[in-house]
Length: 357
Image (tube, rainbow, N blue to C red; front, side):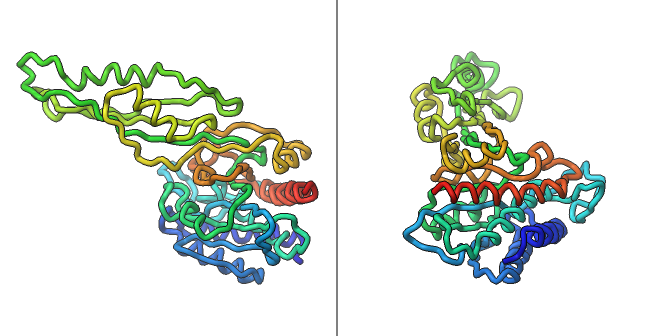
């Protein structure tokens, strides 16, 4: 078995290669090939569908529970504020710059190193499946959600996203609604008591003022925000409808289906959800993974940002090197020592978790 030091150096080298290989969401075929090559070099059999690559520990046993390790290798497109080449891995002052270095390349390679460390262990109380997934940034149909049908029942998961290796034990879900408020079209010169724009005012006010009853200890209340309004095409015509877009950040006290049912009961407007699968997620503080992290000095918190946790039905913990505020920023970077420490902490947390079983 390779030493942790060797696995760490190989992880950093892989991250540099990933940075220098374009992998925008749905265009990750070349980074998927790099990950395949990494598995091959470590003598680990793997499977691939589309641009998702996954592998199981060597002594996989169907009678044991299964732990998922997951992070993604797709990136957003670089913004115009970059001063460095986003597709060039540049090391300066202990920082590794490059697109996807922080979100979530550092997490991915750290989890791959961790998986390799445990791969041949014959005494694991859990199976481990490692999934390097695609289309996370776009919440696409060919990401982690498409792989789940191929995997055994998952009992718990660590999803690698930059958390400064603190324990994100809850994550808000996302529900986006297209709301159509109807009215009666007419010439603007005529009296019209059914103008859809005026009809939309109490609907907008309802979204602004309504409070959902259940408040999460970690994530706080459900938050609803009207983010787009569209109606009419010319000054002298009252339109037939006013279209709203509503962004809803759902806490772990509700499913998206429950939120939608409550809204539909309150409003007469036509309400169409864009998707229902991006649910909130959480894991109890008492769970062994969380307790192992707390014992190592980690703190717990609730995360407002979305990740592939949203497509998992098992209990999951978001944890990884890097800092979320650097994600999608110009001149994105991760500290080299964050990767080194991340691998060590992942291994310590899992070692302690397995010893509890």
